[in-house]
Amino acid sequence: MGIRITFAAFGFVAALAGCSEATKTVDEVARRSAKAAVAETLVSRFPLVPKAVVTPFTDCIIDNSSGSEIFKFAKAAVVGTDETTVALITDVLGRPATQQCAPKASHAALAG
Image 1 (cartoon, rainbow, N blue to C red):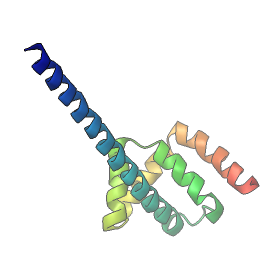
Image 2 (cartoon, rainbow, N blue to C red; image 1 turned 180 degrees about the vertical axis):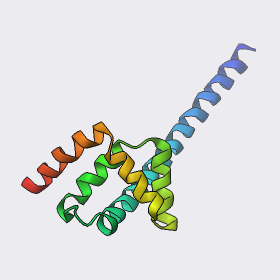
Image 3 (cartoon, rainbow, N blue to C red; image 1 turned 30 degrees about the vertical axis):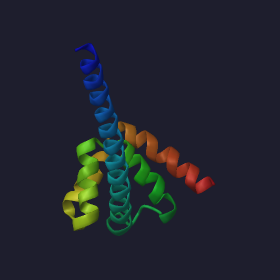
């Protein structure tokens, strides 16, 4: 009986590890898609953002977004960006952490 429990526990742990890898892959794909949507929106809807800082701004926005917000951005990459995407970006840009990140990132991009 103890061996069966050990095998069952091993199988459960192996399944969790597989789920963890699948979840990590899904998250990475979502983040890449989200970055594409945010960058596209910054270029098309935020004309005052210099092209040189689009990528650093995008990184700051994604890094300061929740998981559900990242998936909304990823969805926008598939179905197209709209005013909802703009509003979400504006919201994330207004957060203190993003406001600290964006100037540092843009300065580094413009200096480098």
